[in-house]
Length: 184
Image (cartoon, rainbow, N blue to C red; front, side):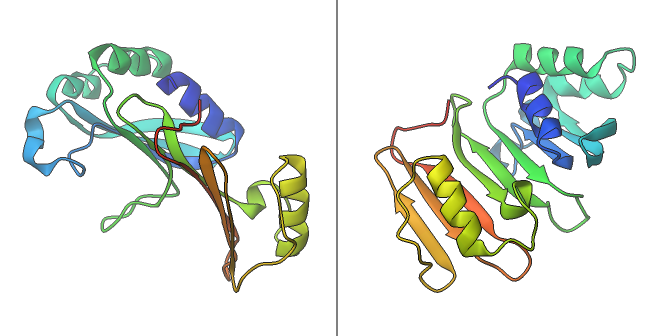
Protein backbone atom coordinates (compact mmCIF):
# COMPACT_ATOMS: atom_id res chain seq x y z
CA UNK A 1 0.00 0.00 0.00
CA UNK A 2 1.46 3.35 -1.02
CA UNK A 3 1.57 6.13 1.58
CA UNK A 4 -0.74 8.38 -0.46
CA UNK A 5 -3.32 5.58 -0.63
CA UNK A 6 -2.98 4.88 3.07
CA UNK A 7 -3.55 8.51 4.07
CA UNK A 8 -6.49 8.81 1.67
CA UNK A 9 -8.04 5.62 3.05
CA UNK A 10 -7.69 6.73 6.67
CA UNK A 11 -9.25 10.11 5.91
CA UNK A 12 -12.17 8.44 4.12
CA UNK A 13 -12.62 6.14 7.14
CA UNK A 14 -12.91 9.30 9.30
CA UNK A 15 -9.85 8.41 11.38
CA UNK A 16 -8.52 11.94 11.83
CA UNK A 17 -6.48 12.84 13.77
CA UNK A 18 -3.84 10.15 13.21
CA UNK A 19 -0.07 9.70 13.24
CA UNK A 20 1.92 8.00 10.48
CA UNK A 21 5.18 6.64 11.82
CA UNK A 22 7.69 5.52 9.16
CA UNK A 23 10.91 3.58 9.84
CA UNK A 24 10.76 4.76 13.42
CA UNK A 25 13.58 3.79 15.75
CA UNK A 26 11.16 2.60 18.44
CA UNK A 27 11.24 -0.70 16.55
CA UNK A 28 15.03 -0.61 16.14
CA UNK A 29 16.61 1.47 18.87
CA UNK A 30 20.10 0.33 17.83
CA UNK A 31 19.73 2.17 14.49
CA UNK A 32 19.25 5.45 16.33
CA UNK A 33 19.54 8.58 14.17
CA UNK A 34 21.49 6.87 11.39
CA UNK A 35 18.25 5.54 9.89
CA UNK A 36 15.77 7.46 7.73
CA UNK A 37 12.66 7.84 9.86
CA UNK A 38 9.80 10.31 9.94
CA UNK A 39 6.68 10.92 12.01
CA UNK A 40 3.80 12.90 10.52
CA UNK A 41 0.74 14.04 12.45
CA UNK A 42 -2.42 14.52 10.41
CA UNK A 43 -4.84 16.92 12.07
CA UNK A 44 -8.56 17.36 11.66
CA UNK A 45 -11.80 15.77 12.72
CA UNK A 46 -13.40 12.74 11.11
CA UNK A 47 -12.76 13.08 7.38
CA UNK A 48 -11.93 16.81 7.37
CA UNK A 49 -8.13 17.20 7.33
CA UNK A 50 -7.03 20.65 8.46
CA UNK A 51 -3.27 20.21 8.17
CA UNK A 52 -0.32 17.89 8.71
CA UNK A 53 2.89 18.40 10.64
CA UNK A 54 6.22 16.60 10.59
CA UNK A 55 7.02 16.08 14.25
CA UNK A 56 10.21 14.03 13.96
CA UNK A 57 12.61 13.20 11.15
CA UNK A 58 16.06 11.64 10.90
CA UNK A 59 18.49 10.86 8.09
CA UNK A 60 17.41 11.95 4.61
CA UNK A 61 13.93 12.82 5.88
CA UNK A 62 15.22 15.82 7.86
CA UNK A 63 15.00 17.88 4.66
CA UNK A 64 11.20 17.83 4.86
CA UNK A 65 11.28 20.15 7.88
CA UNK A 66 12.42 23.00 5.62
CA UNK A 67 10.65 22.22 2.34
CA UNK A 68 7.42 24.15 2.85
CA UNK A 69 6.71 24.40 -0.88
CA UNK A 70 6.08 20.65 -1.29
CA UNK A 71 2.54 19.28 -1.19
CA UNK A 72 1.63 16.33 1.01
CA UNK A 73 1.52 14.05 -2.04
CA UNK A 74 5.00 15.19 -3.07
CA UNK A 75 6.40 14.62 0.43
CA UNK A 76 4.86 11.13 0.63
CA UNK A 77 6.19 10.27 -2.83
CA UNK A 78 9.67 11.47 -1.85
CA UNK A 79 9.53 9.35 1.31
CA UNK A 80 8.60 6.34 -0.87
CA UNK A 81 11.59 7.06 -3.14
CA UNK A 82 14.02 7.16 -0.22
CA UNK A 83 12.58 3.96 1.26
CA UNK A 84 9.83 2.81 3.58
CA UNK A 85 10.73 -0.33 5.51
CA UNK A 86 8.32 -0.22 8.42
CA UNK A 87 5.31 1.91 9.11
CA UNK A 88 2.65 2.11 11.77
CA UNK A 89 -0.54 4.12 12.03
CA UNK A 90 -1.83 5.47 15.32
CA UNK A 91 -5.28 7.02 15.63
CA UNK A 92 -5.93 9.84 18.08
CA UNK A 93 -3.80 12.60 19.47
CA UNK A 94 -0.25 11.91 20.60
CA UNK A 95 0.76 13.05 24.04
CA UNK A 96 4.14 13.41 25.67
CA UNK A 97 4.13 9.95 27.25
CA UNK A 98 2.60 7.65 24.70
CA UNK A 99 1.25 7.21 21.23
CA UNK A 100 -2.47 6.79 20.61
CA UNK A 101 -4.04 3.51 19.49
CA UNK A 102 -2.09 1.59 16.86
CA UNK A 103 -4.62 0.47 14.25
CA UNK A 104 -2.59 -0.83 11.28
CA UNK A 105 0.61 -2.85 11.24
CA UNK A 106 2.64 -3.59 8.12
CA UNK A 107 5.29 -6.20 7.37
CA UNK A 108 8.64 -5.46 5.73
CA UNK A 109 6.98 -5.69 2.28
CA UNK A 110 4.46 -3.00 3.29
CA UNK A 111 1.54 -5.38 3.29
CA UNK A 112 -1.03 -5.12 6.06
CA UNK A 113 -0.60 -7.93 8.61
CA UNK A 114 -3.10 -6.64 11.15
CA UNK A 115 -5.63 -3.89 11.51
CA UNK A 116 -8.07 -2.84 14.17
CA UNK A 117 -11.43 -1.16 13.81
CA UNK A 118 -14.14 -0.18 16.26
CA UNK A 119 -17.81 -1.08 16.14
CA UNK A 120 -18.59 2.64 15.99
CA UNK A 121 -16.72 2.78 12.66
CA UNK A 122 -19.73 0.92 11.27
CA UNK A 123 -22.79 1.53 13.47
CA UNK A 124 -24.04 3.54 16.42
CA UNK A 125 -22.68 2.74 19.87
CA UNK A 126 -26.27 1.90 20.87
CA UNK A 127 -26.41 -1.20 18.64
CA UNK A 128 -26.02 -4.33 20.77
CA UNK A 129 -22.71 -6.16 20.29
CA UNK A 130 -24.40 -9.45 19.41
CA UNK A 131 -26.63 -7.78 16.79
CA UNK A 132 -23.68 -5.97 15.25
CA UNK A 133 -21.54 -9.11 15.21
CA UNK A 134 -24.34 -11.15 13.61
CA UNK A 135 -24.84 -8.57 10.84
CA UNK A 136 -21.11 -7.97 10.35
CA UNK A 137 -20.25 -11.67 10.01
CA UNK A 138 -23.20 -12.28 7.70
CA UNK A 139 -22.11 -9.38 5.46
CA UNK A 140 -18.60 -10.81 5.12
CA UNK A 141 -19.55 -14.52 5.06
CA UNK A 142 -17.79 -15.26 8.34
CA UNK A 143 -19.26 -18.18 10.32
CA UNK A 144 -20.80 -16.98 13.59
CA UNK A 145 -22.14 -19.18 16.39
CA UNK A 146 -24.36 -16.40 17.71
CA UNK A 147 -22.72 -16.04 21.12
CA UNK A 148 -19.79 -14.27 22.74
CA UNK A 149 -17.61 -16.19 25.20
CA UNK A 150 -17.39 -13.70 28.00
CA UNK A 151 -16.41 -10.49 26.23
CA UNK A 152 -14.60 -12.11 23.30
CA UNK A 153 -15.51 -13.90 20.08
CA UNK A 154 -13.06 -15.07 17.44
CA UNK A 155 -12.94 -16.95 14.20
CA UNK A 156 -9.80 -18.38 12.64
CA UNK A 157 -9.82 -18.94 8.89
CA UNK A 158 -7.07 -20.25 6.62
CA UNK A 159 -5.32 -16.93 6.15
CA UNK A 160 -6.59 -14.64 8.88
CA UNK A 161 -8.02 -14.48 12.37
CA UNK A 162 -10.92 -12.23 13.30
CA UNK A 163 -11.31 -11.30 16.99
CA UNK A 164 -14.11 -9.23 18.47
CA UNK A 165 -13.61 -7.66 21.93
CA UNK A 166 -16.56 -6.20 23.82
CA UNK A 167 -15.28 -3.39 26.08
CA UNK A 168 -16.94 -0.74 28.20
CA UNK A 169 -15.94 2.13 25.90
CA UNK A 170 -16.34 0.57 22.44
CA UNK A 171 -16.19 -2.83 20.80
CA UNK A 172 -12.94 -3.59 18.97
CA UNK A 173 -12.55 -5.72 15.86
CA UNK A 174 -9.05 -7.07 15.23
CA UNK A 175 -7.98 -8.70 11.96
CA UNK A 176 -4.67 -10.54 11.97
CA UNK A 177 -2.91 -12.35 9.12
CA UNK A 178 -1.90 -15.93 9.84
CA UNK A 179 1.60 -17.05 8.81
CA UNK A 180 2.37 -15.81 5.30
CA UNK A 181 -1.08 -14.40 4.64
CA UNK A 182 -1.49 -10.67 4.28
CA UNK A 183 -4.24 -8.23 3.45
CA UNK A 184 -3.63 -6.87 -0.05
